[in-house]
Length: 101
Image 1 (cartoon, rainbow, N blue to C red):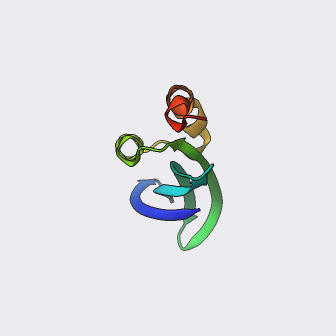
Image 2: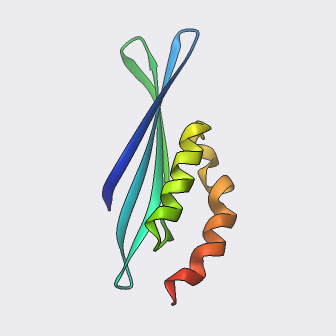
């Protein structure tokens, strides 16, 4: 897995700071470059990391531009890693045919 792009977002609520990281990733899949998304959230109280959540879908589409658009959309909406598969699941299913397997 390679990280190609990363977007960061910080949200503060009371004493907790939520740091979100949205990454465009790629890897080889059946000889084709497949693009995916990784989302990570780190929760801090002061300088202490109190929680870490991470999820990824590493094979979404062979078309980088399509995955970049989805990455920007979930970054703008501060999607939590725990909802990544729920939100992108149908999109991923619709793009499987682009791999010509």
